[in-house]
Image (cartoon, rainbow over all chains, first blue to last red; front, side, top):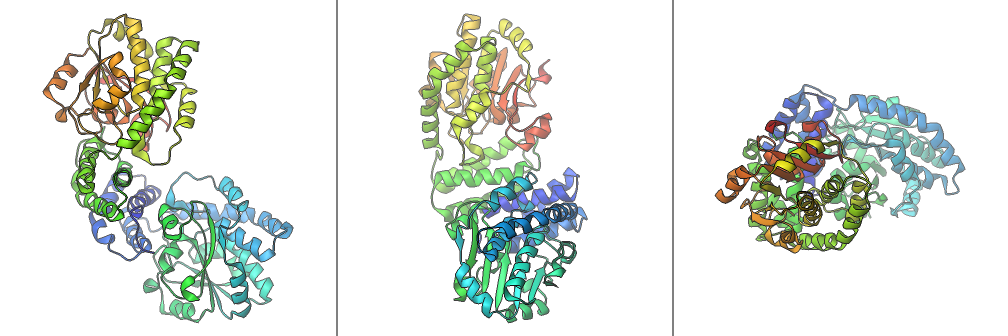
Length: 289
Length: 289
């Protein structure tokens, strides 16, 4: 997805939030912001907001000497989500909708965990609200059709904690297909609160899928920053589930068989997809038809 | 008030909001943001956020060829506020608190009108909430003491529409003192939704005070950009009421006999004054004691 005007102040705000998570030293907050502002004219020329995010987050790590500013947040979110897990399973079992559709909703609700946008955030309240929503757009039938035929399935994760909600969906996919052929991709290095190998492991993803390291240090599976092994897996997968806005921003120009599953969280996505803030989307890639 | 890290993304967001009010041409939104980002490293060195705001808003006017992006908003807000005026007077008459204290609260509630922060804003709801709040800090006794002794009173206005709420307070000041010696200062040129001469006139301020043009094109009465006539008035005034955050940011280093009356609207002010978002403050200048 290309950059919208709204992305520019938002990326600056994201810079500040990350700097504040990384260090309490306000001089470093100013220094980091000044540095990002200085290079912003070149950053604006990059192809997607996640390309810019990659540079910004690498810079904040260097300036603050903190390689993982969201480490504590990620641990807390995973812990909170693991506590919710039995409740999510109960919700799945007691739902009157198709189990796979309910599992998709649960996974989408997990996308509510997103600290890139600010420090103030009531997780439980947001989750409850999101679980009670319906999808604004849901390519369910096309997905089921593809799911039946798929050989290798790639699931590209997003935030730590959200991983627990993803586990619910992957379990349901395994049940539906009566096999276990899902690969769960994580970031190669910490970036914002995105899930790395450790975060996915801590969420129990390895019980239901094979965790693979995409190698990227971007807040999206940007192929040019992923390992050759991930490229191979990406190209071989007959069905890809991409979680979160970041992965959508990074992969929306691809013609791979991707289903984008996320909650709309910013005006740029609203404009790009003619959606409304808070909408839940499960969008089969129109470029792969 | 000096610049806080939070000011930098906020000023960029304010740039975008103003560009969006000024024109629907998204190419100009990008162009304006790029230009502001380009000069931001120098802007950060300016003494207060309102000095930066001044440059940014002048730039957006030039880039969009729109000398008054908030013109329509200001007219709407003045109209809405004028409709509320009888209700405000009723609130004042029926209050069990001292009339002047209630009038101060009404004027502070008027400071809720603030479009610099975003386009989404429910005025009536915000006003009702604010009118039901108590001041977090209120130098009322000191103010009454100064008010009794004051000769010339300068009231530095803030937003269009808020002017109607200011009128309620000035009327009550005139009643209390049994005279009419208030000068109401407005911006010299349109900047954000700040009140100019026309806006103050449309609100009926001339019924209760003499409207004076400060001459500034900044979103605050920054003395270096005001007319010599305003300087003289400022220096001769034995009591000054300064409305809004902008004027606080611009005048907080002054040792003039100022009372700052405003609602806390951003993290920078929270940190600067150890206050909380939404707090109502009526703060006698500690530097003037």
